[in-house]
Amino acid sequence: MTAIIPFMMIPQLSDFLTPADIEIRMEGFGYERGTAVVWLQDTWAGPGDPATFRRGVLLLSYLEGEHVNRTRLEGANDLGDQRAQKAAAHLQRDLIATHGQRYLEPWRAEIEHFGNPQHLISKNDDTRAHFYRRVKNGDHTPKDLALIADVEAKEAELKSVRRKYAIALWRYLAHLHKHGMSPTDIARWTGQTIAEAERRISSVSTAGAAAIAGVETKSWSAYVARGQAPAPDDYVGREPVWHLSSVLGHLESRPGTPGRPPQRTR
Image (cartoon, rainbow, N blue to C red; front, side, top):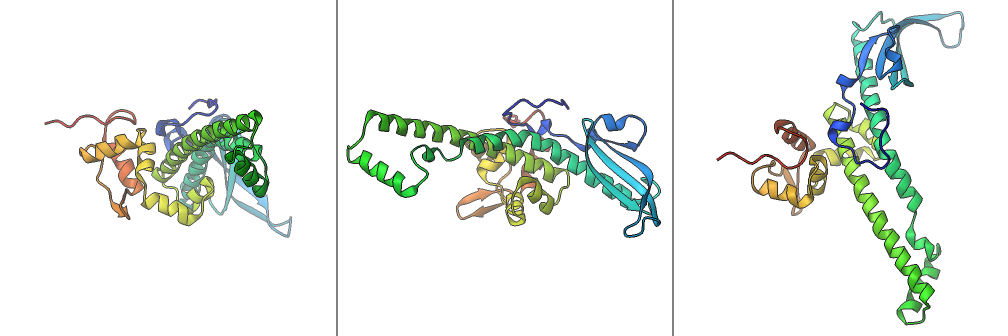
């Protein structure tokens, strides 16, 4: 994995970290200079009484040499302890999520930078409504029309940025789910409620499935119709939805990179 992520890049699923990219090793071999979970036997002062010491295992996670998180396990001796194995796996998933945030943060910053283009006219709703009524009635200047054109251009650009962010977010969420992250933790990392995260996992829309697969929405629908993508797992009203595991299973079962599926043999 490269340490430098291009600005405003929509990640492919293959761009995210996987557990195979994260070493889990004992401290002292330079793993902390890369992307790794390292462990060591540790002693620390107990709560309340500094004279009371605890002994156990300390696990530290690093992303490209930068310290990310730590966990102490009293009474553990090494990674043979089941608690240590569970904690190491949790730190691995946190590293995967932390790395993935690097793809999302530029898009969020860009959306925040745009703000509300309508505020170029006025931040006051009543003032803005009066402005549009006046223009509609023909009482406007060339400057007014230029302002409206600028607002509409920025709204179109913001819509494009939001669409690309939505694609990146779908792929990020899918990757976290693929590697065993719970809906609660997915919600925390994606800034959603637990109910929203669970709904995205259980009911992936056509647009969401297409985003994860790396194709256009109409292409995904065509692949489903031709049997080159899985049939819907359910319907919400008249809209087809898939469980996230069905979409990921489809991508795992087909050769090549995300995008157009292979033709069926006859």
